[in-house]
Image (cartoon, rainbow, N blue to C red; front, side, top):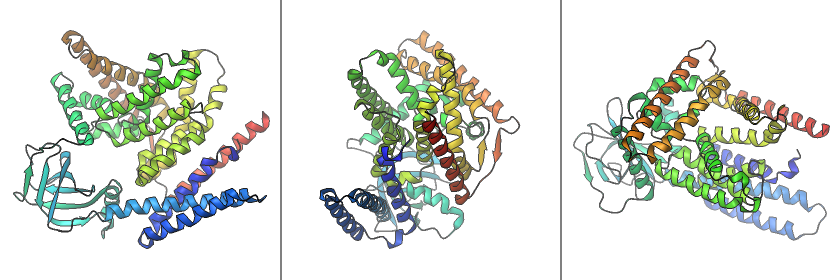
Length: 495
C-alpha cells in the first residue's frame, strides 16, 4: 500500500486539522480574512499547475494542503458564526416552527422550534403542552434565555456543546400560560412531512399490536423512533457492544443494500449495467430515509453509501480509502459539525478500517465454502471494527465491551429476521390473518434478541470500565496506525 495512490487521504488530513484549529481559535477567526487567504492560496495553486519546474509537484502538494487547511477553517467558522448569530434580537420573546414533538423532562416539557433564520432553540415549558402538531408556530415569552456556546458552569458545558453542535443556539424557559400556538396553515417542509409520517407509522404499529418493550425495539430498528425505548434496554445493548443495532445507521443501510442486491440479482448483471442497480438502491435508501423522518444517523449513512455506490458505478472500488475519503470530505462540507458527532466518528473509523483490510480479509479465508467464508468475513470485520473503534468508545462512554463478537454473532440472525419480517409486515398490512402471524413473529424476534442481549450484558467481564484522556486516545490510534503500516508493508513486500 503506497500513500501516493491515495491523494485524497493526504488532503483530508489538513482539511480536518483546519476544522480542529478553527474550533480551538474560533474567537480569533475572521470570515473575510479566511476567504481572502483561500483565494490567494488558490491563485498560487494555479501558478504551480502551469509552471514547468521539475520540483513543482512538491510545491503544489504543499500549496494544496495549505488550501484544504484554510477551506476546513473557513467552513467550520462559517457554520459556527451562523448558529452563534441565531440568537433572537429580543431576549424575552421567541417565535419559531415546531420541529420536534414535546419531550417530557424532570420538571418541564421540552419543545424544539426553528426560527426564520434556520437556527433552532429549545423552550422548556412549565405545563404539559397539548394539541401540538409538527409545523405549528410557537410564540412564547421566555425567561433565562441562555446561549449554548457560552456556559460558565462546567457541569453543563458538555450538554451545551452537544446542543450547539446540533444547531441549537439557545435554551429558554416559559412559565405556564405565557405561550401561544398558531396551527400550521401552509404546506409543511419535506423534513416536517417526514417526521409527521414517522409518527403516523408509530401509530399504525400500535394499532396492530406492536407495542411495549418489543415494540420499542422494532420501531427503533425499522423507523428510527427511539422515544419509548427503555433506559435498561439501551444500557444492555451498550454493555453487550451492539448499541449500533438500535440506531438506524450504516449497519442497517448495509443490510438493506445487501437485500436489494440479492433481490435484483446484481451479481449476475454485466459490469457495465450494474450502475442501474446502484441508482435504484440510492433512490430506495433516500426513500427509506424519508419514511424514518430523516434520522440524522441514517441520513449520514445514506449519504456515505450514496457516494460509495456512485464511485462503484464509475467502476471504482467502492470501499477503497479514496472513496471513503471523498465521502468524508463531502459530508463535512455539508455540515462541518459532523466532526463532533460520535456516530459520524465511529462510522468512518469502522468503514476506513474495512476499506484498508477488506481484500486481505476475503483472500485470507482458508475455505472456499460460501457459508464458511461468510462466517469468516463477519467475525473478521467485527473484530477489526471493534479494535479500531475501542479507544473512541472508551473516551466517550468510559467502557469497552469485550464480548462484541459474541453479541454480534448471536443477534445477527435475529436482526436479519426482524428487518425481513418488518418489510413483509407492511406489505401484508391489508391481510389481517397474515399480518397477525407476522406481528407475533416480530414480537417474538424482538423479545428473543432482547433476552439474549440482557444475558450477554450480565456475564462477568462483558464490559471493562476505562476512560482515557484525549492524549492517551491519540496514542492508541498512533499505535494502531503504526501496526497497520507494518502489516500492509510486510504483506506487499512478501507478495
